[in-house]
Amino acid sequence: MSETIYPAGIMIFPPNDNVPDFVRGTVIITPRVLADFCMANENLMTDYKGAKQLKCDLLMGKKGLYLKVNTYKKPDAPEDGFF
Image (cartoon, rainbow, N blue to C red; front, side, top):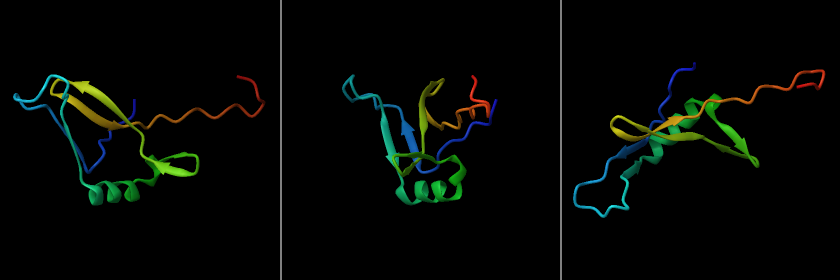
């Protein structure tokens, strides 16, 4: 199992007591910190239609929702073409 990597520059907080039920929490993004994290971790970036992306999973933990970087890499196909 790979190490859990949390994206820098993104924070998720549980909802306050006085918000409506449909509010699940607050997400705060610090663009410069997130950009620095992405540039320092180019190996974690994926490519979609020519654009670099940071793929994250939104998970539920003991303290509520959180993000972790999705590091899954699709296995390479065998050279002989058989699965």
